[in-house]
Amino acid sequence: MKAEHRVTNPGPAKSGMTHRKNLEKVITFKNYIAIALGAIIGVGWIIYAGEWLLDGGPIGAMLAFILGGILLIPIGKCYAELTPAIPVAGGELAFSYKAFGIFVSFLTAWLLAFNYTFVLPFETIAIGALFESMLPGLKTPVLYIVGDNTVRMSSILPGLFVGLCLIVLNYRGVKNSARFQMFAMGLMLSCVLVFTCVALFKGNVSHFHPLFAHGGPLWTAIPASVISVIVVVPWFMAGFDSIPQAAEESGHKVQPQDLGKAIIMAIVIGILFYIVVIMDVSLSMPWQESYTYDLPTAAVFRVAFGYEWAAQLVLFAGILGLITTLNGFYIASSRLIFAQGRGGLLPQWFGEVHEKYHTPKNAIIFVGIISLIGPFLGKAALTPIVNSSSLAFVFALSVTSLSAVRLRKTAPSLARPYKVKSTMTLYLGFTISIILVLLMLAPRSPGQLSPLEFAIIGFWFITGLCAYLWRRKKKDMSKEERDIQILGDYR
View 1: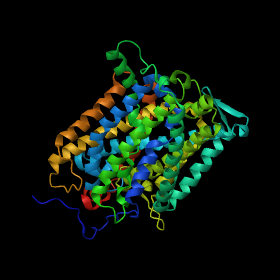
View 2: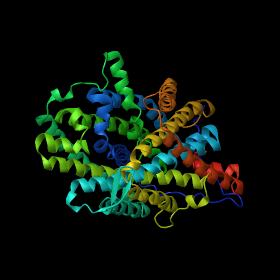
View 3: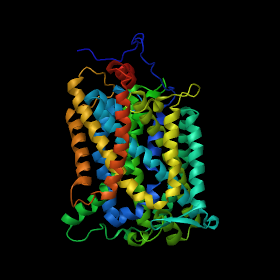
View 4: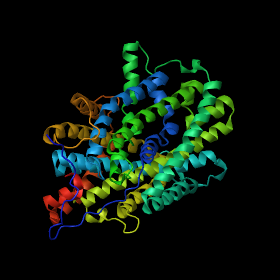
């Protein structure tokens, strides 16, 4: 049976059919690795390392990230097979559309857009927090209080400034933003290497005890410690899936199978990074003590060794991580929302492309505005965003994994430059993603979401559903044209 190749010349558009707006093809293989890693790493390792240790203990937290990484590999394999097979903007939108049709693709893409889009205010909030930690003398008076956290002008302005700069950078072309990502990621990893050496030479392995946060016999302590952390691992690993969002913009030197390889490499490197960070904090001081400090990953170097320079280096690396995550998710979220507008699932305004820069201009503006709201909310907004976004992310993982399974049956002749050898790996990816969903939904599960977090997801879903129904009611796009707009030459 011949492989189903993309339609290189779909022929002239029928009368009344809208021309498909395309993005510029300039992203390199190294750019993809940097975009994905930047999106994965972020700053959670500075803010949440203490909570990982409190919930899991040093070995429990490490095992959670190792196991979480292993569990994500089969899911990553599903992405690795589908991305080079259907390399168009929107990734999961296109995969689920080809496998299940329009409504499932809308639901998947819109929930994933929630995860991507609300990572952005998380990052702009954290930029202000890190700025105040690095330069406490520049703190301004309290403007107001949200929850138990104060909001100051000194916590608002840094996030606004960085956010605006990256909006402009992304608006003016993906080539420059991809190059910037490469530079910032290289500088950040160099910083991490330096303070890791400090922890290895000055730390003490006795600080690891007790190995697990939960007491009792090992057969109960290990699962309880690991599960308490593993439910948030998918959220902190969110970012490898940014590669499918920008797959349409791959340069001519990027081979289709390279997209699949980049996804797996990003997962493996991301997991190794988090393990190193947990090790650094645990070596530096007793982990029960490290939790008591704000930004424990930086504080341990200051308190345990008296190395202010090392603490400042951690904070500087954190700011770089924030910037790379912000940049990576500007790319991913804007492409996903753009693809929905172009494909007739959201208002057409979202599907516009800049004539000069060939970027999804309105989608970038939309996600940029949401990102700039973050600094005004303060740190009280962080935890609900993390947990509710995690559920949206793992739901998208489950649909993508199931799409890979279904397309093996419904589109067996689809050209798959990166083909997973065993179909059982695809089934395993789907099974794992469903388990992750259930861990967040099941009553009395350590990872069960709160009513507020469910309400946040519900509000986002209803808002998107209204926009979806409004666009569908217009009936401005036929099934044939929708296929072209979402799948392009790969329909």
